[in-house]
Image 1 (spheres, rainbow, N blue to C red):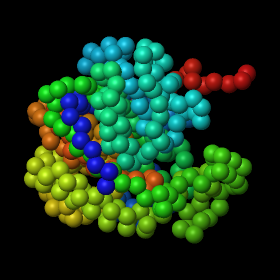
Image 2 (cartoon, rainbow, N blue to C red; image 1 turned 135 degrees about the vertical axis):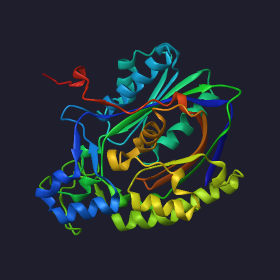
Image 3 (tube, rainbow, N blue to C red; image 1 turned 180 degrees about the vertical axis):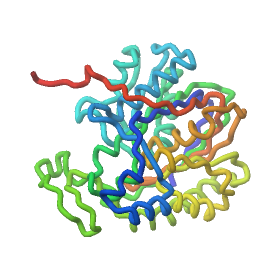
Length: 360
């Protein structure tokens, strides 16, 4: 485990956004059959989610969340010195979507902006990265954005489509000498990079066959669609993730009783139930959002927090965070957040019209 502790940095605010377009899993009855759909709902707990429209991207969702957060907290755009966008499916190959968001948010040129290519573990690693940069430069504020539009890369004829939703989020980090320490622990297993992958579309296979065909798992997709080895990922989650959390807790002298709640990546309810059992975490300390939002990749942790605390102010919460998946990559964090600074999930169909760049 790569461990780190950040002192003098606090999370000052959190906002989350999802598309306006709601998709109910029961609407897939005609395509996959009622029995199959009902079984997936019962096993995973996912009943509905939100998908971007044709012109809407992960960058749009992150932008709306960021703008909302800065407006609600009355943060001057020019005060942001670091902008990180954690994303798997960016708006463009070039430039980084963070640079586009930098323009849209009206930040000054005295700002470091870049994309970070991570998915399910991205929120935790993004917090760690933003905080570490704040500790080692003259910036006082960092905006860490996360988002994905997974619905764009899942085959319409793949039953895993019932699991995924789209979402974006923004977290504001600030230098504050009185802040509680944040602890992080991360691991990577690149040997299993094929477990969750879009095989084609970049430069390894730029001209792969685009015609969908039936794969060994019975789903119809092309190499330009997302593939997930469910059995491999399940095994990884049930073994590697609880092992990391136990190692992380022991390293930092923490136990499950010290946490007010645990916000985990939201793959499915069955996995989360068994993870809680393996780490001796009471189920009522693990809020769920996947039943209404699906698996929103890197945005699932902040969406879960916005869903749980965005409408109430319950004071300070000591939180255990954990993200795990694509890479394979997994991470854990211990953070303290004022729930009054967590905003409710908002819905949007907004998109960046000037971003539809063409040679014409």
